[in-house]
Image (cartoon, rainbow, N blue to C red; front, top):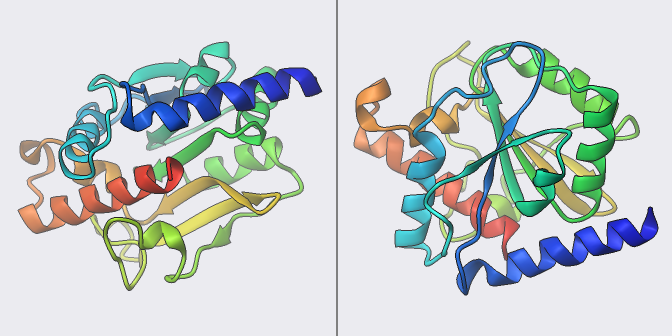
Length: 217
């Protein structure tokens, strides 16, 4: 197991260092439970396009879909998860996702509305010893290429609560960033999907670029 973790870590490290040298793929997480993991189909392609243009990344324009329990997960250093409803991780999923995150991978979860109780339940299965903690406005993820002095921006109203950014921190490293009551993914979508203003879409894309920059710094 130790050797496998070392090999996985080296693989993810190579992918990270090559982000600015040759195209790197990022992933969309496919999970069980009936939730619409496939929501916001234009989000990641638009975020990738924005990052490649504005922060000089070299990410493959087409994200790949990876299942939680698949070895393919280890081919992407960054994976995005979204949806509106139920999430269920099998025992295999739990072990695989934990190994991925322990070995240098990064998970961004964006609650598209209605995921919160399921996300918290399933991630507790992955890391029973960890709790989500709210990241302070001073956290580096909010101050990469773009400064967000008040922390996570609010994109959609949802329940009218303030946007919150939570993290799972493992051995001093942020391994999972969970954006709640925010809906960054909707802000990344094509403008005609949600009819968000240019200002709203831009702040969502800038925050997304900060996440990418943080992961690959």
